[in-house]
Length: 191
Image 1 (cartoon, rainbow, N blue to C red):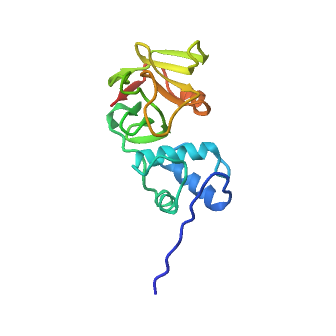
Image 2 (image 1 turned 180 degrees about the horizontal axis):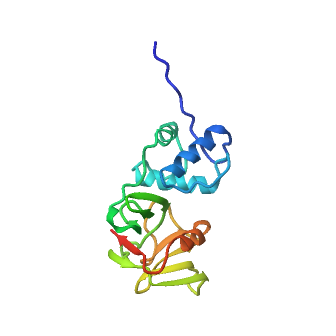
Image 3 (image 1 turned 90 degrees about the vertical axis):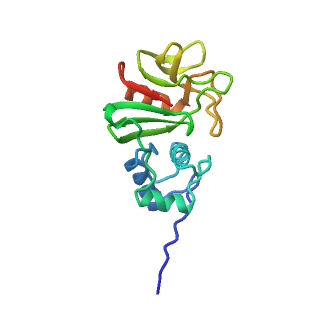
């Protein structure tokens, strides 16, 4: 006889051992769900990044199939530039930013890049300027990689479409951590 295991869906506010295990699984795969045993907004953003990477629709709900994949250790971002050592990859098609070391994704975030009328520049760059706090354009903890193009926190980071004037918008709660995780001279690949 076969016994099937049913994996519960995990939405906002769910708490317990399964949530703890799920968040541990996300961290091992290079996502940033935060600690604790409850599905917080931070965990929801990690699920959104996971969904974007794995082409699973763009929302913050972890259905049973996603929980099963994460607990099985599947769904990490596939780094495109493993020979670059510590570096950042910004995947415009998937709308994610990945802080990687070699072929290992360390932190994967959902982002919103430039809309079609003001696209994000693509290519190989290096971070060259850091700007803490807010600036006059409501950009929060900005790290510039080419001309006026920067990775920065912003109040509006749509889940389902590129919306910026060319920069790489990250959610305000993630901005400071990303800012502290990257460094001047670090390689940035935008594609």
